[in-house]
Length: 385
Image (tube, rainbow, N blue to C red; front, side):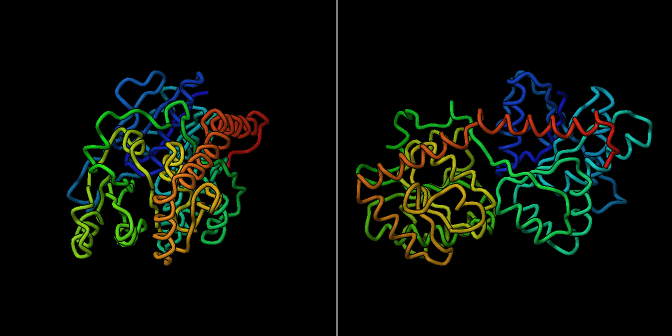
């Protein structure tokens, strides 16, 4: 199949999953064209079978903001005409489903036949925060409904979509995944010694540091753990709320025990020296960062929200607490860092969940079959959506 994968290039979960899917599909023999404003950071410079197409959005004084949807639609049109695409796979409803729909209408209106089919994957913020805004809801609901196939990364997100948007189409749940041949605990040299002193636990958080991640709660929980266990909080990534979190660490007197290391291309190495992963988010439609931690044998303590209960069984493969139960999160953290056998058991159970349910070789074929199902409707002569 000839597939265009449309995604954001940021370090958020949607861009990571889209890029990994593109790489896996290419490895399975498909012709993959990855379309984004910038090269996704996990794509790499030499990725056999994946062709990167940069969307360039010119600025004109007449417009107050760049017209990204129009330039993205034009790029999709050019690509579809050049390589006769089978599938346009839009990751993130806003604005990618809208751009894909506009591109297909232009292609159909100018005589291209057959036109590519649109698959839209819903990832979370596009639905739970942005898409449900009345300013966007009607339009984005329409564009989702006009997709030929729609997937969501969790049952929770599927339910949120039906609840928050005027969407009537069937939504298939295909969860996020990892390349399990790569995502596991690895040797890291002296990284642990550089991050924390001897006999200190490493508590870790990886995110884009936006309000939904609740960085204040993260630092609060760590400060409570720190009262009972010598520990260092390592904050991987960057974003608007990181300075606030560091300021709060100073106010709570734990600044010397907090290290911000910025964005890292090889998150696996950092997770491989972690003893505990904290994810006290306000919402998580899936929780890819938690999955990456579990794959590296790091017990996860997270909020009981969104799709996280679909990934973590509390008390078995991690711990989930109500978002406001910071004392409970801290108590679970202290227990894990103080009891070697408990830590080993939870870490092993988390790894087993990943290997049993979320490896690429299990999930990527679900996307392939879904593409084939969508294309079979075209071959059967069904009308365009």
